[in-house]
Length: 537
Image (cartoon, rainbow, N blue to C red; front, side, top):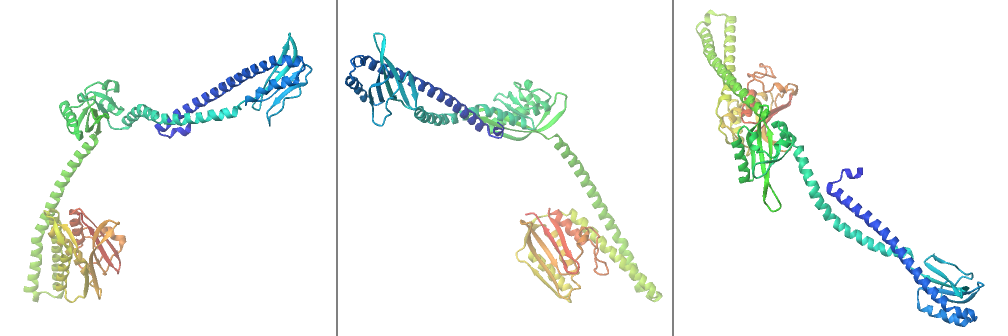
């Protein structure tokens, strides 16, 4: 029986019905064959006994007058019966008086046989010859009868045909039983398997079945729910009925927002999904409906909206503060730089070399601070600028930037290769700032190379994602510090080695993120660096 456990219900029904039919047919076969064999042998015994008695009555005269020829002649008509193989007449003392046998048939036994015997398909019968109540001899007749095995073979063919016919009958019966038994069980198991409230409703809006989840969310037992109007369990019954009418008009409804009221007063926000179901003729029988509990989701959404609003306010305040501080610091710095320059120009004769050195250092520091403030303003501006997406020719943009860098630094030997027809969608101003920073870095960090190389192109990442890249053969960097690459004011090289504020890559990352893309960097110290970025289509 364990072997049936994992089989489909229809297969189980077919096997059970088939085995039942087979056992019933086998029992019928045994009974029929047994009964038929019994009646056949009984009938043959009666027929042959009657034949022997007739022969016995005709042998009285030949035995009395010791007429062997008459007895032999009397046995000759037996040859017309193909079933009779041999016959004999015995005198009273037991000697064979006359006999008959077909060719290739066993002769009559020498001793007087008695009674009725069946052996190896042969039936033999003995009958006494009686005259005046005295036994004057006996008659023996042997006949061939059909063996039991032949009868079993004949009936076996009928039995096999009956099995084949029963199989053809069994399959449709099993199919009908499957639909009649399994479908309701399967439908019921599906309803109960759902973790969400699940109900069936008739065309009048009356509940016909529910699962345990429905009882839990309403606080009402299944028995009490069945037969009631489904809309009464919602906080807005009219709205629930509207959704029900929509199902009948359109065939289904998706994510219809409703609120279920539990008997203890707890409200449960749900998304109602339903569709009609029909009979085989297309007649609408009712509605299958499921309600997904979204209370936790709505609570989380409200919390997210609240946190997002708070974060937006904080970001705006931070940007305003950063912009205000940066803007307000520029005037004092310009004053420091300006007055330091005035001292150097107007009071140069009154200052010794050390004093002039101090003023030069003051000016350099104020100018560096000015650059840092400009970068801070740029970061703030990038976060606030309104974006306008358009299709951009990245190849032409990169070539223009590199030509400008070459004009401003014509002593350098720089070789560059730009893949043609690189097109991306983005804000023209921000993408230009991003490429200015990436190519500016490549130009700067290859400054110590006798022959610098810069490459701009695109490649496939993770078999499907398209990435654009800017590569160089410059100073490179240690990947152990790659997490610092895009941090504001983070540097992986000394200012004395390569000038800069450490804001360029932070600007690049912010621009890419504003476009919904990703950026990453790879590098090897002394062998160059590569920066990859991807933008959504």
